[in-house]
Length: 540
Image (cartoon, rainbow, N blue to C red; front, top):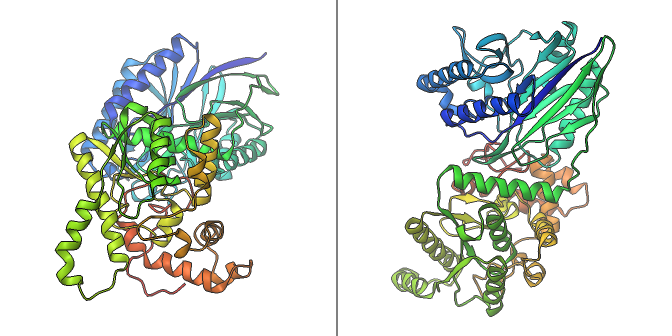
């Protein structure tokens, strides 16, 4: 005789620290799953009441007390549906990252996460102690196992549940986006499902949280390792799975799986990251300095797609070195995207600074100092408009520039969110072409133009840097793959160039420490992933 379970996976965008808003969203989702989907079970993402990652909020007793009260309120208000709710749990021995199976106000079972990630952006050992006990409990006569997020990446927890007779694994997750992460998740889940001969319901959150973007991608993996269902990416959604269990077999209906390109995934991550950063921090909109170059063009397009054209303003700030075509290209971009704009020359402020400093500089030749003054004039203008309007300044520097310090402190680095901070220059071009496939908003002349900061006559980026195709490959090998100079040279790169680039990376750590946070798309982002000392005698 067969039995069925109808399982609703709630892929939700939750706000770190806003426990009451999260609670309201969870209660509404549970009622919807029960009344509209006729679900037996609803599963929420990891730490759904507090949001993830709550970081040092977890060190505050009042915060933990509020989270506990919210869990109790959820228990009181949700009836007649089994709920898998992930939450903090205070014990005499320490804090647990836990998950409870709740039905009609009663906690039927509780599981504590066994593997606490403590690498990259994760610091769970700072806050939690690990669990050591599997959790298997019956729902409508079907033994159900529960594991949390990182536990899926190790064979032990699922095998423990299988040894106790589990027929299916339910797993709340908070797994942030990275390029190729979805493929890694599927391979890992497929390996666990096949090894245990158990289907896995993987439920991830969605939304931006500071530098992190959670991409969703919730899915049902059958016991053969195939994706049976998928909730999609970058949007809140409910995935309803009906799974049939017999004495010897488990079956679920196969649904279509979304196929996306790398460019599409990265672009959507950047859009979601910008939208949630601005909206969750209650800014009125976004403000972007437009140079006529590709970085500011892509940033403006992302902002419009995230917020709508009415909440985005572009500011052109020409100088004596700004080519006429820069203004022309910038105005064409602004027209295509339909945003408000201002044109404010930096010449008066630049001249004022030069005049004020002339007694000190009169015997010195013009150098990068004057270039930086121009960038800082622009930074002051943007920040002044930001203060008056409540719009957040989005900086436009890319990962290639941030790596080698090709940016000006308190100038083009001035702002609240660095949209392209983790996007290599070569990927900037690919994303711009991808965006134009949706609708042609970035003028081709901007994409084809030779990169220049326009801070000196005839200036080009390649005056200071190797071609971006070479630079980005060296950065990928050194930053992401952590190869040595010798290893990089062995792949055909010039030693002098590699040594110059790695020295620039080390020398400019002080700049990156003062840069705004940026949206993370790599596993080695300049942020919580990258914790190198500013003061260091190490020579690569």
